[in-house]
Image (cartoon, rainbow, N blue to C red; front, side, top):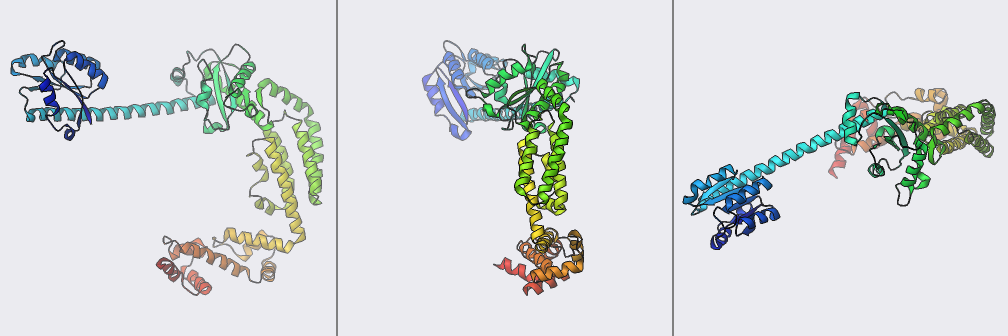
Length: 525
């Protein structure tokens, strides 16, 4: 509904206009009335109408002066001038005032309706134009924001083209890209959700970034503070984890980079800060960690690395020996000792420790055989270590791997034939959909001859390998046939039988009904 204000000094005409038309049918509601131009201007400012109908001659302020002021203050308002024949030339001034229309008195319903419909159409055009402008403005703002985020990422990774630096620093409130800047990396398990609140802690300009490329932490860039970066980071950490802060003190990890000359070189400081934070995360060091601190620890480790590797090799041998002997308690105790010694060497890079521990897991995988890795979830167990962020999680994974390796070895030794059958059944479950699976191919995977495996399987389970394979395929076929979108030929291929006719024969032999009849029976239900 569009809002209408009626301005008329004659009471009977003012009230008559209120009842003159069925305003609601025109999509118009009367927001108010006014007795003269002064009151009309006040009501316009208060009610913000879309349309004003006004007489010209009124005491105090006439309709033309009021219209002029309304257009200055509210350019979007549409104005309809009411005028008598004697005021016709006078009313022409309304054109200069950008009045939308004028209607001669005495007012006829037809003429007023004609003017109102035109004004209403103009209002609708205004609304549509505004919506289009707002949409375009929103798209421009969204594009600008995306570009700003890309420029920020490029800056922090050292790939920003210099021509974009000016637009980025202006958007973030920096005076210049020159001067000295420093970066901090802060652990953020909330995945960037407090980035804006964190930005509010800085009184001056700052860059705060969280992206998929740096999952788990935020990067902050500010002009170099007067105090040392570590001292500033400590104060920042206190604000972050203080009363009502963004993180608990026990969760806070801050890595500080070294100051650099010029914002275009900030990627150097960012890389240092992220390296320090990765160190803090791996070793579970809370608080503010400086680059100098990590370098001191690294130098100490390098001076002790030969002793560490020598002792470590003895510990690895002890673990492998205990696993061979199925002595879980001793194997775990030796592993605990190894990780205790690792914990004393905090100068080592996290990936160095992962690589070192992966050597132990590789030796255990050789002891257990390739099948053990598949039972533990597949893949190289050493590779799994690189997916774990902390030394504690690497330790937990390694201890569990040791226990699982001993369990697998015990099963193999206590019941080798049962172990082989479990492996065969697992392979059938995994590969039944392949037309290439056969007794020969499975026998090769469990390192047995086809004849021996075939007789062993029949003796242990009471039915043949091929019967088990067919049963698995037919059970899966019944599941697929329950869906009308699966045709019989497609189901045959899905369960590893390329020949539709052969599939139908096997299915009917198994269930006494053809697959097509089975599917039709299900759909009738």
